[in-house]
Image 1 (tube, rainbow, N blue to C red):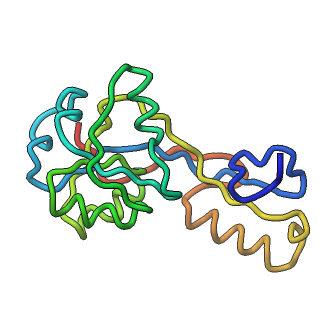
Image 2 (cartoon, rainbow, N blue to C red):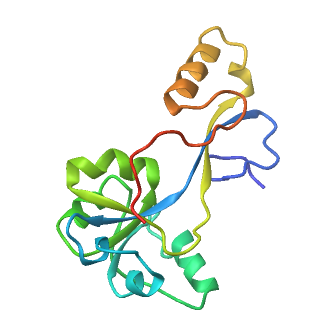
Length: 171
């Protein structure tokens, strides 16, 4: 396997160091006043609505679609956008739903009038990490930069910290 940025697990890339910063989970995002925001979001209610999909490399399918597929279900994707920062513009002005990383959704919720709901199915979360090449491991400025990033991410190096006091996700 070739070593590169899109090689997510970086197997065989001994020249890189990785530090886990935090675990992230997905939440469902809807505009304030959307019909799904009243009461518990069930899988059936989730699937009744259209969805925004985030497709960074223009592909189709996502971890949400894979999870639904294992359950024998599928969602109706109406709009695909290239990144999570564009999706709130669409969700805020439509009845479409979005599954997004919770920290991103929390940062954008108040600015766009969005509500965060617990995902109606178990979508696998992910670990956000910082990565650097071995050649800068002992560079005088690099350990300082890694510490700043670690503190900004809210984690304690070298291990992971569970999520702390964040905005509430509705049931």
